[in-house]
Image (cartoon, rainbow, N blue to C red; front, side):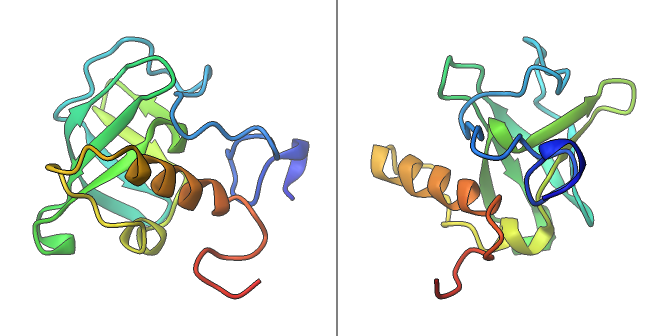
Length: 136
């Protein structure tokens, strides 16, 4: 735990209250169209936002990673957004490149709710002390 009861990452959601599908109140998102904004992980740039949802309890970003992950797109639940810099058109997420790369693969043709459950669970697990994908 970090100062102020935060989760395993600086700026993370308070332990036990991470909601993957809702933007944090203090992230500065509001109803802004984030398409075209650059996305910064905790350790560098990962790409540009291709699609952004503001659905109640179902918000997410689709990021075109360009050459970083061989031109693939990734879906980031809204809860991973730490803050937005509207002047520089950048969205900062509180996950590392490796965590994002290891997330369940995004398939834009797959609208199965099970994928959202799996993705939300993966990112929720990244707030625990045990890294995702390791034996517990």
